Length: 608
Image 1 (cartoon, helix red, strand yellow):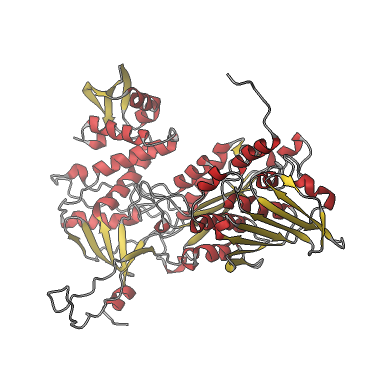
Image 2 (cartoon, one colour):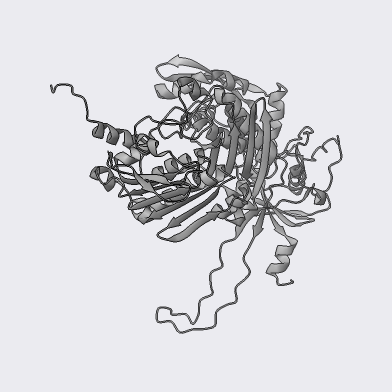
């Protein structure tokens, strides 16, 4: 066994640098945050070859005294706090005193700085932790830092860097996060001498979002604002049609600092519950202001992770605010098809036997329709819901539309479909109906599922959700882990009519299940619950659990694709659309209807 020995300061610096500096983007983040803390009003970032060869940050901040230049490269040396008490009332982005020391340990750095009001400044070089003598520098007030040959003395780490284009993309992402959170700054980014971004001080948050993500996204954002005690929430969220396959377009900031937090991300996702399909993620730019004594930012050297004293309060604030805001919008999807393209004239082609082939039309795109409040027909206050005229003697009556109680409106509802309007079923799946705006195509299963889901919610809140006892309890074999998941949720499951108990050896005994599911196999219902619980990294909240099970019940009780409906059932289902609080999406996030506007139809038939 080798003897224990003290590591050299140079090795310690390289080890510490590995925690803070992962790639060129990390250098940009640390240096720009230092410039922000120095009170800069303009920061210019220049990058060469994705940052592996050159990173230069120039600011007009307060500058560094000549006597402090060498100390700036010392580990845990900082001007931003002096005692442990200061950690609980931080007003700066940096505070650990590790950034510049880590950079200096694995790169060749030139630091030049001149405090305002002084006739000249000073400069210092640091090559792999080795400092040069301090020299006079006659530059402009502020600080200028050049970082060259990143990881030149750590070849193993340098081999793990990607190509210039990939590293530049990461630098641009770090720059974007800083620009979105610091609205009072003029920031520029150059790569290989070319301007990538120039963000003036006059650009507000929406302007900056447009700069980085385009005007199309900007036009599809809804502002949100909320306050709860000493906590405030602001920013923008996009409509469900802007969904993404990952969480890359979710920008979460706490006290001006971009953070990664699983709880906040889950709260954001919860705010879109029922509007997005499984595996899809919303677009959002959220800014939380939390008292410094309620959040701990000293969790990781990169300062991208935080801990909250009362995380559940913040999560509830986010999810409730987003859900309430989206409920004020008419999110009915509008189908916008491309203009028909003229058929190409006959051309000779050595690869084709036919004289010509028609051009394939581009696939239609879906975007949300948002009518201004004034253009929506007003909903009479306290008007009772009209009971649907549904033939209860239908062979599939247990799956047909049932009357729904009046639902209080929390947002502008879609226009009720006029009774004289003729609804037609197509392919035993879609209902086509004329509306004032054009032609509405309805997915019969998705719409019925939404209506039943909201009925089930009403019944559950009223304590009237019926369960059916099994004459002989049914044992369901699960793995020990699956059985534990189900038994942990026995309380919420019982409220929904699923009575489960432990039968030992990984087997769960099912004694009752929701009566609404009729002949649906109780075993299949329970296994669907197991699949849902197993898909979550952490146990779902009680509300999320109940809503997921209610949506499962509604899905299995709704009319199916392929069910032939009678004319009365078609009319009743179409009329009940306006009774739902959210008639735009089924509980699983699929759209219930698509609107072909009259203007779009006229355009397709070239009447305009």
